[in-house]
Length: 280
Image (cartoon, rainbow, N blue to C red; front, side, top):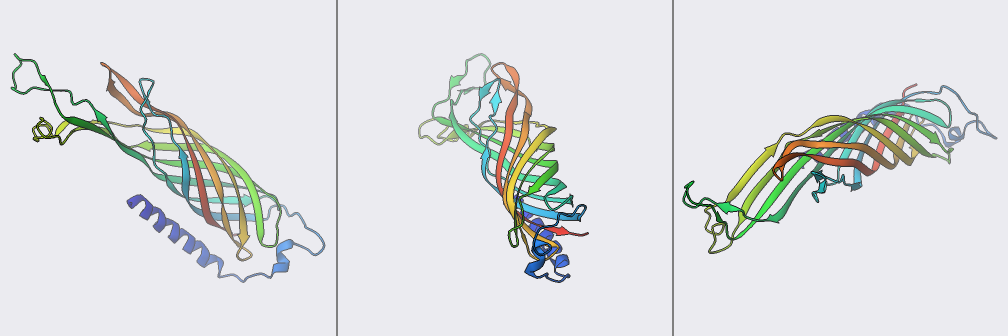
């Protein structure tokens, strides 16, 4: 898909740029990784770093979509992401960073069986419409993306040779963009019926404007970094992101009235990999 190609291209360019800069310096021997001989010295204000990451979800706990408080049964697909950021190393154990996380490829496109309704077979207002015979279905489609601005904190659990495991958490705001919500009713071929002979290939086609809104977001992380050089680190791990719920689309006709297409929240489980480059 176009979104996944975009993620791959941006991620590859970002990682290449950081790597090219980092390898301009010299590799440092293993004994420098553990600080001074005989113990670990805690240094404060060790410097700033840049980071870039790409990720893919192995599970998205779908928002519960509802119309007029009735569940719709709609499910979102998995998502990919990329992010960039900058951070500060407070000491050997604590660091902070600010990141921009872009989530793409949310969406659903489902099909369900529905009643075919009625048909004005003689185009006359004087005669009642007749029931449509045959089988019909409805296709519903909606896509979304989200941009999260996050402030994150990490606790490094100590260095083991070139590996440093860590845990962390973050808070921020996410700008969620929903595309237009569509509903299309179609006849399914069935011989000897109005649907089957092609008289009514499409029953209806409705498009509803969707929302763009800022929502609270939070994240927890766990993973490890690996020292490639003195300044360049490979970062890999797990990240859970929560984005609060809201309204995806408004004023959809339901039961003689109107209702919003509501969703509870995004709960995104991802595996991510990236690079951190210490610039000072």
